[in-house]
Length: 102
Image (cartoon, rainbow, N blue to C red; front, side, top):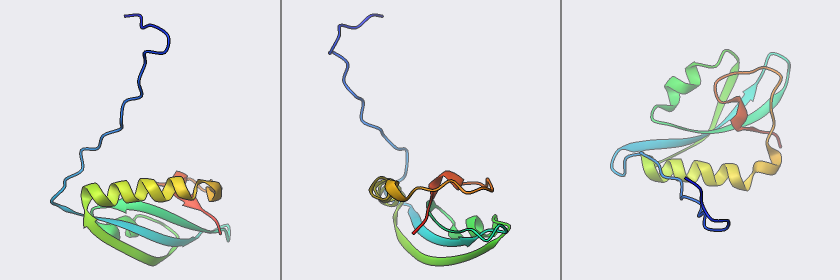
């Protein structure tokens, strides 16, 4: 279907996160085998399971809890605010696109 120029409206991104179940936003300090030090900001339903997935030194700096909906939106806001500091490490791992440097 063709649309007229200018009639396209951006759709608001929605999330299927629960407004009653608990979710967490975390800030981790990661020390990679290549001696890179970086910070990962992420969302999880189980932070310590997520931390145990990484094969390098991990230090938990902050954990914020709230509803899954609120914490997911908060994580997205943090990534937008600190996008200037985004960093792609030399080693790829789950969530490597959510890293920042100081």
